[in-house]
Structure formats: structure tokens, C-alpha cells
Length: 313
Image 1 (tube, helix red, strand yellow):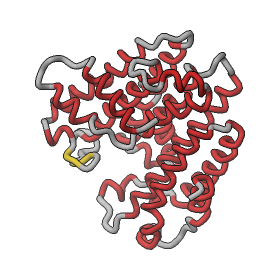
Image 2 (cartoon, one colour):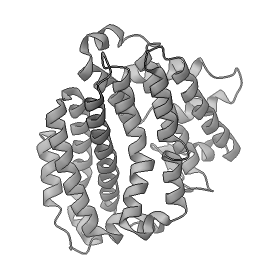
Image 3 (cartoon, rainbow, N blue to C red):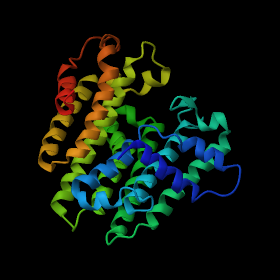
Image 4 (tube, helix red, strand yellow):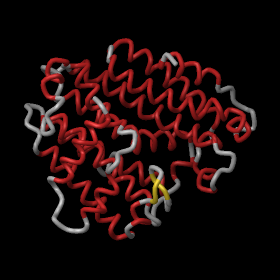
């Protein structure tokens, strides 16, 4: 699925759910243009891997089940970013190369736009017409609710995340992996011709590993900056639990590659490979800086090799 088509879907679903009021500018600023759209890409790639004929028949339909799911996942992701950026949370100033929404429009505007996007995501899910739509709705609300993504935010903002490596992994699983699991397993629920408990269990593990790996690699790439912010110094797990991060990332990448071979999700693996390549383009040219922050204590070569091997870079 082309990024341009995904953005067309986002614009379509956003327009259909916004009031005729100046506040719509805030929503549009927050959502468009999209970022990497990693999660919507995963929704469609899983669909194309599991049910290619149905994928080809519906990929141009802006109101298909998967169009609603991919937009819903991205709106939900954007809501979390809007709230995370606020002064009461991470207090960030820029997002996707431009001022954060609360900087451009104001705090209450960003807060309410986030609330709106959260509700639009559920509105879109409620319109999915499929025998397993109830299963999808239950999974979506559980994975992203008070026991899922939101609790990951709690562990982060309460600083419980930094107290142990186990807490760090749990935070990454909830705050990052759950939304990726919704994109992958949620897509599978409405893509598979029939219920397949064995494959769904494997996809649960595959998507969890991808989500945790995604965050650990992202954390590592943050060390490419020569000057680290105080926030980064306080929370980056590679600085606090370096050896644990290295072992877990190596193990996670290895296990993910093994599961990938079993599941044979070729199109989805290409999306992952593109992500690895992008991260390598940040990490490799800045290895000296990264190693400086890590005091030269870690050998990152195995992680880099596994990312290159999987991505065929």
C-alpha cells in the first residue's frame, strides 16, 4: 500500500467525522501529513499476506474494513502523541519536523483534539462489518485501554519504568508494542478466511516482539545525538541497563526472525526491513557517538548484523 493512499484514507475519514468549525484545523494539523505511517502499513501488509485476493479487491476502497482499521489505528496513535507532547506529560516542542500541536494552537486545543481522535478511532471500528468485528473491538479496547497502552504511559510518567529493566520491558510492551499488535493481529482477525487459533497466537508473539524491538532500537538511535537532553539521560534504558538492552535486543531480533520464517509474511517483513534500514541509517554513521554515550562497554555489532541480515540491507 502506497503512503499516499494511506494519507488519502486518513483525510477521508477525518473529514467525515469533524464538525464544521475552526477546530478542524487543529485535527488536520495533527494528523496530516502523516509520519512514517508504520502501523497503517502493517494493517495492509498483513491483509495482503493473509488474504491477497481480498486485499486486491478492497485496497482502493476508502470505506473498506481495513481502511477503517488502518485509519483508526493511526488516529489512536496520533491522539497519544498529542497528549504525550503536552507540558503535563513529556513537554515536547516539535513533532514530525514542525511545532507540536499545543505549540501551534494551544494546550486546550491539542488536548481536545487528542480526545476527539481517540473517539474517532472507536467510531471507525464500530463501522467495521465482519463476523469477527466484536473480537477486534474487544482486543482494541483491551490492548489500548487502562490495562494496556495507557498503563504503559503511567509506568513511563511515574518513572517506575526506570527502576528496573523488567519495568522498562513492561513499559515498552504496553506503550509501544500493544498498538503494533493491534495493527497486526487486529488486521489478521478480519483478514483470515476463518478463525485460526494457532496462527493468531504466533502473530501475537510476532507483533509483541516487533513492538519491543521497535522501541529498544528507537531508544538506541536516540543516542546518535552528540548532546543528550536531560530527559534522555534520565530515561534512555541503554544508558541505565546497557547489557540487558543488548541481550534483549539480540534475543528479540533472533526470535522475531525465526517467527518470521515460520509465518512467511513477506509483505509485512518488507515493512519491517524498511524500518530496520531507516534505523541503521541513523545508527551506523553515528556509532562513535553512540559508543561514547555507552562508554564503549557494549558490542553493538550483533544487533547491527541481525538488522542487516533480516532487512537484506
